Length: 338
Image 1 (cartoon, rainbow, N blue to C red):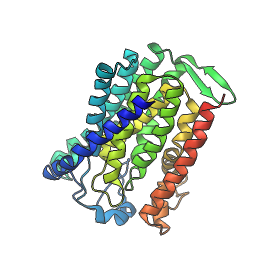
Image 2: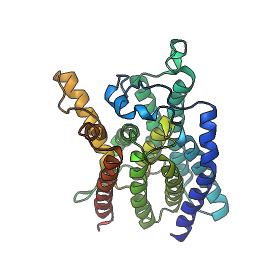
Image 3: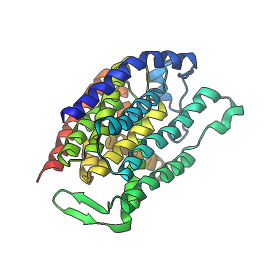
């Protein structure tokens, strides 16, 4: 455990050194919000979001790119220098998910950098339906490897035990990865909200991986935790940098992979409970409007509802962190319970 914590500190230190020049670089290439008009996952205008976030115009996004770079380099370095052992296919699953979803998010961020609403650059944009298809394709690859190469075919639920689902594990794992990629993206709407919740979840999964004696996964979690912690220092209210889609998609999908590799199915949902509530509120709103022609909730996602009620942004974030800590403790309890 001391070695893993050392990796966390090293990752935090390196990210802190690099992040200020990286922010300056983002300003230089003008990768920042240029206007007050945004759209949701389904390319619908978000006037309420814009109302509460209009003062954030000019804040650079793309911080996830630095996290991916630092974490990947240190993760690969840890095997050569520290002799950390990991199954080659497990290494591939972790890095493929981490980097590929980041590249998909980076492509979407490029639209904001290159197009910025100009129709002649419309080919840079992706409608959610096409982005969703690409997410599924990217998720099927690690899901298939988990089943065929690493022997994952079971779903573990406390009180029921291990249930071998066979080939159904592939669509199940695909669903989990895509769901958390989008849940994280939705939750990344307030300064420090998603990154703070991620650190809480990673602490729990570090404990679970350590109890499972999974040294390789533990190293990845420890390094990622350090880099995200350094990023969070500059992401809390009022944020100097945002993750961007490159970060939110990568980190959300990676959180799902981490949960799947621990083999604790229920723990993924419970530890990531706030992310589940965020995406759940958006889905409820979507289906109620589509099938019933009206909204069940006044506004979604959930964090936007509390802003509408008059809560200050830091108040929403801090209480979400507290709720996330509760879910994390509950999920850790269920995962470690013998």
